[in-house]
Length: 320
Picture 1 (cartoon, rainbow, N blue to C red):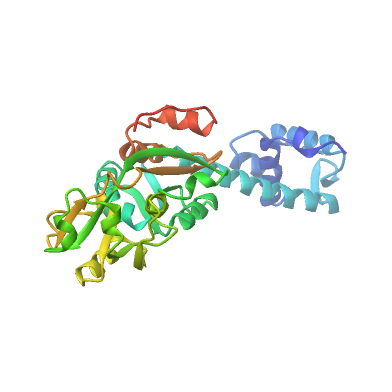
Picture 2: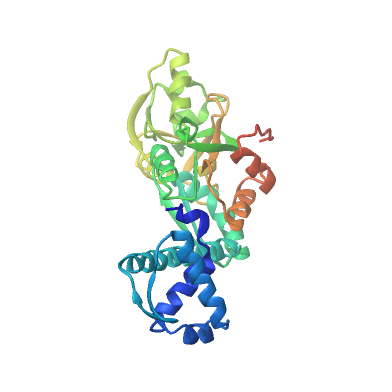
């Protein structure tokens, strides 16, 4: 028997199922399909010839019943037509540039302090797109993106460690130290790691936002920071700093002068290496039009063509 995929066409499958659906009455099937009876009969004979078997039992020119093999062929044809219909629905959905779902895996700091303005602009442009935020630590963000649970991931740590992901560096940032009003560290100009190491510290969890840069800075000076509490997000760190548990090391973007008036904010950009926030996409992914627009809103240096080049494996040079 010849390979089915090489010889059977979509029209033949449609005609075959239509004839069966109309009680093996070719005339009725032709009327339903707006075509001619001879045309349907010819296509069915060609299908049988290509398959090398009889699909129908014939009595003269009339189709009397399906052969045993024909029963299987019809069932297979119906499955094929359903799958083709599914493909068309998927294609229709993906051709729609302004409706659908955008799932973003990210950390608390990004979701709380960076994404609100971006998503506000995005939803104004694409009101029919439903946005889903999945928050987690950087490893969770990477794994959700790899698994396809998120369309894209945004984090500082871990993303570049996964070969299944294409990562786009988006922007650089550093840290600040938050202390309660009147704290002795607020009098130090400039702040030093040696002074900071003498006080209890509240900061991010070990796997979290730029924590590796904090550890590396103290280690380079031969210092052991007195980290008394770690947390997954900046707001929790602020809560315990306000309670007097220690000095908080947080991302600079997490400090809001209006909302954080209980604290003294001490610049720490000279103490720690700059970190880079990255946006990650699965290799080989097909992106909806609005996903490209979100990426451009989040990181304007990435146009659609630049993103496509990165997904294709081409080297991309951008300024942060």
